[in-house]
Length: 307
Image (cartoon, rainbow, N blue to C red; front, top):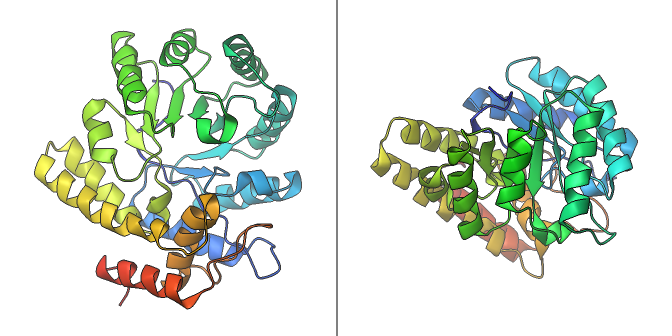
């Protein structure tokens, strides 16, 4: 065992007050929603948690609060995402002290790096901690694609224990699963996508880290259980339903990136009464226009998540 659970590990949103401070009451509501749905773990301070926008003090406070809220009911994994190795190691040490069960790290970014530097980066992280390390493959943000061969090799050497693949590269993902299996499955391979999860499971994924899982954790848990039971028809029904729900991210007018994606998740949860506001971290503006909000509400209602 490599210390990383299989199954559904949603990347927790970070609810905010109107003034931009973290809304810990809403955070507690959201944690209870996920744990109550039967998720297998919680990933705090990922892209959906707006990690890139939060200062170090707030990051630490969010980790500490979530660990306390979860209270051992499932593992808590923390994003330690930053521009370069020394900064990431600082985050790892604080996350480790705060009681998380694993850390999630991207390749270094801002300064241009190649395969040799990326490998050295992950080796340095391993030397800095005994916690399991999940590599976060998100080239749209860090501008480097993690090669399947590198990931599996580092896993066989004990450097990495998991991968969260948000690359959108289906061929690379299939190769990663294939190479991992041939190596004896040293990696727990998790897909970071919401609408092709059924295909990812069939390709060899060990679970899913869905941002949409904040909105409908029960749907993803049901799909995972259907997969485990070999109930392909049920799995497809759940995936089709979640794909329809994911249409909320395409409705906001004039929004791109996290303002559209995370913004739509927050708006849905606000409409559902789980969190108080859909405020985003500066400089991102929340979804405020009636057309976008009404469209999101219609989709969420049709998914059976609104009374």
